[in-house]
Image 1 (cartoon, protein in one colour):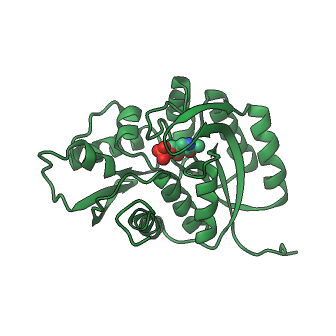
Image 2: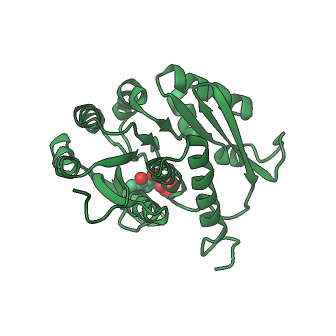
Amino acid sequence: MEAANPQRLVMTIAGFDPSGGAGIITDVRTILHFGCRPAAAITSLTFQNSEAVFGAIHETADSLRAQVLPVVQEQQVLAVKLGMLPTAELIVEVVRLIQERNLPAPVIDPVIRASSGYELVEASAIEALQRELLPLARLITPNVPEAEMLTGISIEDEQGMREASRRLREMGAPAVLVKGGHLKRKSRIGFREDPRQSVDLLDDQGEVTEFRDEWISAPPVRGTGCMLSSGIAACLALRLSLVESVRLAKDYVTDAIRFAPDGSGEN
Ligand code: PLP
């Protein structure tokens, strides 16, 4: 029998930021925005506000499994978003759960460091992500510093973004979205391309799509990576193509930056 609520279920497995700026609260808001129904499992209880991260208590493999299993045993999850995965133990467990329960290939936001500089994940988790998780992904969505850390390639321009996405595909990810926003900030002086644009590159099995958007000169907004990845997951649950999903999720993030209360929008 059809469930009472026919909305499509999207599960986020990510960190909890009590301030609501990033992590699960942001994912849930985004999933609801796209008309899907959110389910969530916490990987880490973090202590933070808009200024800084003060610490975190990570979940264990057992406590993650205990959160995910009852949900996926009862309901069909149509898309999965993975955010902060702070330990190798949690990554191995996520891999096990995906394989065992035949969960949809996840959209992975490879969260490594908070904007404030705090390292959110252990070094061994980065290795486990590269080795174990990338081959199971539907898409990985690194920003420039994350792509550099995952590939060892120094990214100065769009060519570097293309090389990094190729490398990540060689490491097993079928599709890579490298977000160029940080590139803009990194090479503000002497930036060779159009300074009024920000560029993200989607490499889907070698087919590259460029997303060029107006560069919005506003203070950094927290949680944009969470919004983008969970928005893409929600659109995939709605059976949109990967390119359409990225486009719609990017538009959502662009509006969030434009209309941020302390940004250059109208709020
Ligand atoms: N905290 C959690 C739980 C997150 O998932 C993330 C990023 O995804 C962050 C903090 C970092 O967000 P920001 O870069 O906005 O500080």
